[in-house]
Amino acid sequence: MVDNPPRLEGSLAPPLVIMLDDLLDIKVFVRVVATGSLSAAARELGLSLAVVSKRLASLEKRLAVTLLRRTTRSQSLTVEGHAFYERCVRILAEVQGAEDFISGSKDTVSGQLAITAPRTFGRQHIVPLIAEFRARYPALSIRLLLDDEVIDMVDAGVDVAFRFGALLDSTLTARLIAPGYSVLCASPEYAARNGLPTAPSQLADHSCIVYGARPSAHWLFHVDGQPLSVAIGATFIVNDGGAAQRLALEGAGILFKSIWDVGSHIRARRLLHVMPDLSAPTQPLHAVFPNGRQLSPRVRHFLDFAVERLRDTFRSIEAPAVHAGTRARQSGKRRSKPKS
Figure (cartoon, rainbow, N blue to C red):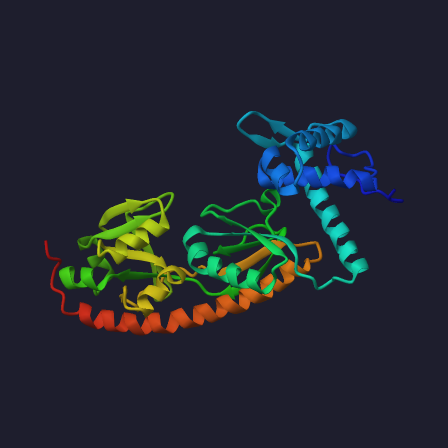
């Protein structure tokens, strides 16, 4: 029994006494929340669905609160459940750290590592990265969540998130990887048929590929440090970044996309960098992880590995992209007007 048990905040005010036998209940609860269902947690833990359900019910009965609202199709944490979940994650991390220390395996990279990243960026950069990292540490398993929306890391049980742009959550710690910015690009086939614009105002005369949850008929650039909103010809409007990129590669139009996504295509001359002197608002890339707790060996080693690899990747795609874009700008000067 813990001599000085932790006290939960909010409505879980009474002291929580944790017996060693109760740790399985806590682990079951954490995995049910992280995986999204009792059946998924049962598969992951190697338990039957009946055992997981019984453990969760026993935990709620002992605490005298409802932790999860469950229906046949979904589940969600109650206020008490959310507070308890955050504390349980920390408790299990402390237990794991104690076990690692006693067993002398403080540097052992094992267990499950959960990672999230935007879809296109994740497919292109994180998938090969985690394959290489897992080959180094065969005792490790990896859970990858690709989503263009920002995932709540605590609710999803995520260890590391890769995110672009401003960081608003003060409960997270971030390591800057590299700058990020968007560039205009188009395929050589599109340039041959239509020429390329040499001024932002000419984008309205071109086929432009727009994507995002809230697509706009304007693109925002920075010129001499000042914002410039430019009307475009939104010929293709899609809700998936990978589809938008595929359209550009097929010669469908001009795309405004992150250098992380299109840099390798510009380097290989599958896409041309359009108006390379035109800059866009900076969106730096960070590796993000929850603060306030000691990092496990798998998270610490992965962060070091990922940051180094991604910085090397950025250096390799940035300079060739700018060089290729200069050639695209020169060829674009021959354009008079778009062909019909």
